[in-house]
Image 1: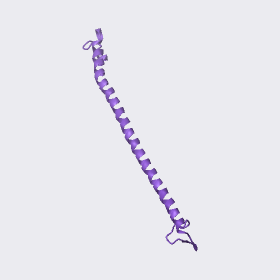
Image 2: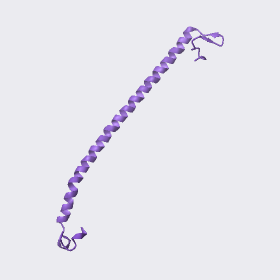
Image 3: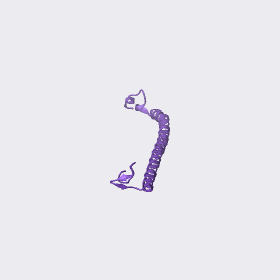
Image 4: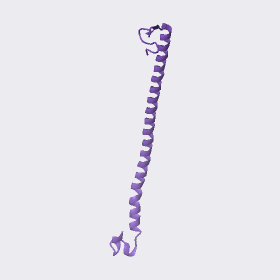
Length: 101
């Protein structure tokens, strides 16, 4: 800051810096600080948007998995019962080789 003439005294190694130049550098410094603050706010809002979007996608995945689980709960017992009723002769429940199933 001193090298740019932005210190409060306005004197750099014996040279007096004009007030307009000090004001100009301060304005540039403030503009840069404003631009940096805006970029930080934009990046934070973008990260929040990405977090929300990931949560929505994971909810969709969970709903799909819930549907598959419900179908499995329905069809696995039905296929087991169908397998038992399709057995014949020696492999029927209560017969000699029924223990195999």
